[in-house]
Image (cartoon, rainbow, N blue to C red; front, side, top):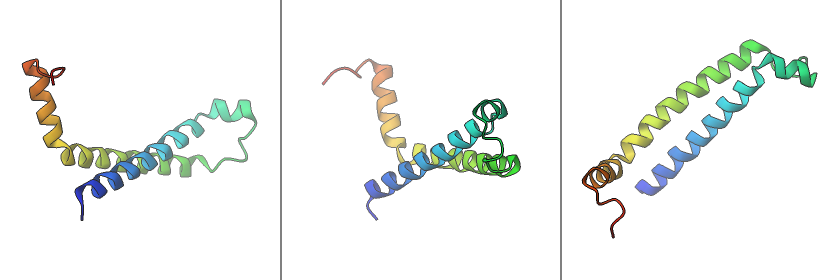
Length: 89
Protein backbone atom coordinates (compact mmCIF):
# COMPACT_ATOMS: atom_id res chain seq x y z
CA UNK A 1 0.00 0.00 0.00
CA UNK A 2 1.15 3.52 -0.78
CA UNK A 3 2.63 5.23 2.30
CA UNK A 4 0.77 8.44 1.49
CA UNK A 5 -2.52 6.56 1.73
CA UNK A 6 -1.45 4.98 5.03
CA UNK A 7 -0.51 8.40 6.44
CA UNK A 8 -3.80 9.87 5.23
CA UNK A 9 -5.79 7.04 6.88
CA UNK A 10 -3.90 7.45 10.16
CA UNK A 11 -4.48 11.22 10.11
CA UNK A 12 -8.18 10.76 9.32
CA UNK A 13 -8.59 8.25 12.16
CA UNK A 14 -6.68 10.60 14.46
CA UNK A 15 -9.07 13.42 13.59
CA UNK A 16 -12.11 11.24 14.24
CA UNK A 17 -10.70 10.06 17.59
CA UNK A 18 -10.01 13.68 18.51
CA UNK A 19 -13.60 14.66 17.69
CA UNK A 20 -15.00 11.83 19.82
CA UNK A 21 -12.69 12.73 22.69
CA UNK A 22 -13.41 16.46 22.45
CA UNK A 23 -17.18 16.16 22.07
CA UNK A 24 -17.57 13.66 24.89
CA UNK A 25 -15.24 15.75 27.04
CA UNK A 26 -17.44 18.79 26.49
CA UNK A 27 -20.59 16.74 27.12
CA UNK A 28 -19.14 15.48 30.42
CA UNK A 29 -19.25 18.99 31.88
CA UNK A 30 -22.38 18.64 34.00
CA UNK A 31 -22.58 22.40 34.51
CA UNK A 32 -22.96 22.95 30.77
CA UNK A 33 -25.62 20.25 30.57
CA UNK A 34 -27.57 21.83 33.44
CA UNK A 35 -27.35 25.32 31.97
CA UNK A 36 -28.46 24.07 28.55
CA UNK A 37 -31.20 21.95 30.13
CA UNK A 38 -30.06 18.79 28.36
CA UNK A 39 -29.30 16.59 31.35
CA UNK A 40 -31.95 14.05 30.33
CA UNK A 41 -30.99 14.08 26.64
CA UNK A 42 -27.36 13.06 26.99
CA UNK A 43 -26.02 9.55 27.17
CA UNK A 44 -25.51 8.25 30.69
CA UNK A 45 -22.33 9.66 32.20
CA UNK A 46 -20.72 6.19 32.40
CA UNK A 47 -21.11 5.76 28.63
CA UNK A 48 -19.69 9.20 27.99
CA UNK A 49 -16.72 8.42 30.21
CA UNK A 50 -16.10 5.09 28.47
CA UNK A 51 -16.28 6.65 25.00
CA UNK A 52 -14.09 9.56 26.10
CA UNK A 53 -11.46 7.31 27.69
CA UNK A 54 -11.31 4.89 24.77
CA UNK A 55 -11.15 7.69 22.22
CA UNK A 56 -8.29 9.23 24.21
CA UNK A 57 -6.36 5.95 24.27
CA UNK A 58 -6.94 5.42 20.54
CA UNK A 59 -5.83 9.00 19.89
CA UNK A 60 -2.60 8.43 21.83
CA UNK A 61 -1.87 5.26 19.85
CA UNK A 62 -2.59 7.01 16.54
CA UNK A 63 -0.35 9.96 17.47
CA UNK A 64 2.47 7.49 18.22
CA UNK A 65 1.91 5.81 14.82
CA UNK A 66 1.79 9.24 13.14
CA UNK A 67 5.11 10.23 14.71
CA UNK A 68 6.66 6.89 13.72
CA UNK A 69 5.50 7.22 10.10
CA UNK A 70 6.85 10.77 9.89
CA UNK A 71 10.08 10.17 11.80
CA UNK A 72 12.33 10.87 8.78
CA UNK A 73 10.77 14.31 8.27
CA UNK A 74 10.92 15.06 12.01
CA UNK A 75 14.61 14.12 12.21
CA UNK A 76 15.41 16.06 9.04
CA UNK A 77 13.65 19.22 10.21
CA UNK A 78 15.14 18.95 13.70
CA UNK A 79 18.61 18.74 12.18
CA UNK A 80 17.93 21.74 9.94
CA UNK A 81 16.52 23.84 12.76
CA UNK A 82 19.37 23.02 15.12
CA UNK A 83 21.98 23.78 12.44
CA UNK A 84 20.28 27.06 11.48
CA UNK A 85 19.29 26.03 7.94
CA UNK A 86 15.51 25.91 8.44
CA UNK A 87 14.71 29.17 6.63
CA UNK A 88 17.22 28.76 3.79
CA UNK A 89 16.39 27.38 0.36
